Image (cartoon, rainbow, N blue to C red):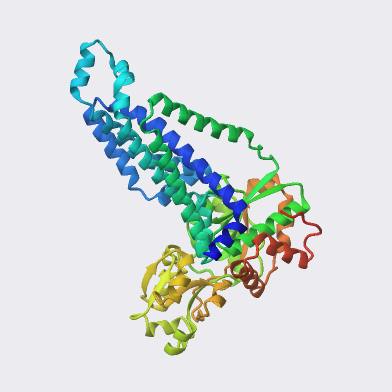
Length: 509
């Protein structure tokens, strides 16, 4: 409990920002969903076949995993608030539409007949009694939708929309239960607040409810109007989940802002390579650090089948191929190699005489491997382990951040890791030698659109100052400083650049 309170106090400013972002996304999504679903329900209520079909269709949308929706939207809508809101609206329409149709269907038909006898038209019926009688069930649908929206909105952090999910993702990545609880508890309390407010409005007059939602919408619009417009001379640098990408992003930011008048916004902790890649191609972000091996094995539509594992050859091929395929420029790579690797606990390695990946064939029937979905489906991952090593491991797929706790608790015996990961030290893991040379070189370098480089040609010389910098040992130590010691990634990046003499003066964030 003390750790939770300490973490909360340390990150209180970030928590306020995340809370407001979560509230903003959730409220905006709910209002849009109500605006769509309630009129649609009123329109379809007197046509039973159409109302049933509409419920079937909107119900089907709810079966689509939210992460899949976000991934599908990125090429068209980019990253940030827009795709998150669109996905949440799609999920919220069904319960609100169902509540509207059900509420109207429960109205006593004798009331309808009496109203008709008194000469009321459809609009008068709706205004005089239908909407008021349907309101309790309609509001119950809205309350259900609000809770669903707030819970699902935690995934918005994966596409740069912020919110309380950023605490959960960061906590999972750094095995920090305090951060996870901050995000989860805050999200739960926000859901309770929304539900309570809607329950309070449930028995109010429709006009009062309408005014409440209009005021909420106006408050959002006021916020958007008061926000400072972004500068034309600005860049967005994003990165994958983890300390290392965040450190690299901040190195890029510091160098660019120190040597130009360009302002840079960093958006860390995107979960998926594919999210970042699509965001870069769509222009939603401008730069992100990518690895040579990831380009040649994953991002190219026609990956090479006979490419050597020579670092220079892999980089040269990646640079030319990604330019030809997507018109993206891949600048010069850094020195360290953050390759894929397989690791086991040191005691387990001694007991089973494991020093190389080939040795795993002796325990493949009894051991369980914990791999990410991405690694499990890569040719330089589990597919390669089958083809090159003849290994057919019993695999459990999981989020990359969870595999360390899983191997510590004995739920898995083999874990997919990265060679510069600080958790190798923390969890006392032994990295097995890649004796058949399966894993290609993974050197990090900035990936950006050619149009961005044409607009800011100075970026090439600035970012290439990092070429052949940072050894594997230095990168591991910096990752450890962020992950375990808890120092901010910006500060770690700043200290390295000052030590290397790459910047003259840096303004503090």
